[in-house]
Amino acid sequence: MARALDTLELFDELKSSFTEDQAHVLSKALRQVEEARLEELATKQDLINLETRIDARLVALEGKIIKWIVGLAVALFSALIAILLKLP
Image 1: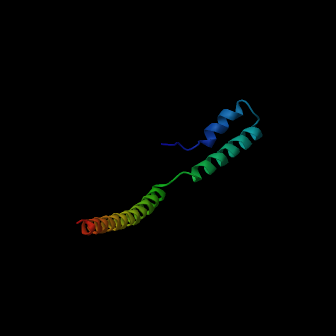
Image 2: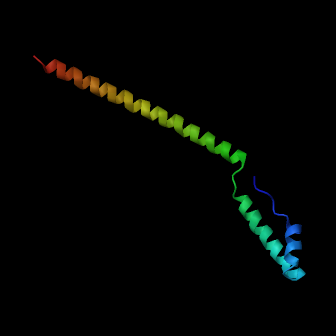
Image 3: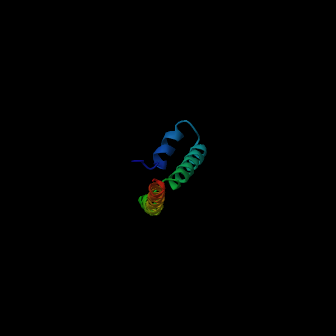
């Protein structure tokens, strides 16, 4: 699981190498980058919505496949009857 960025801890670490103002700006910038990244993550609700849409598409596709199979079966059966009627 992703861990939130601890800006206070980061700030304290940055202060050892940068001025306090620089450390503050860097920690703020890194926090903004992390927030932007976290906004792009999918939530459980996003995944549930995706699953629902996929299920709906599968049901529609299943219906189309059944129509094609029935149509082909009727066509093949009709062709078979026509061939059998032509035989002497």
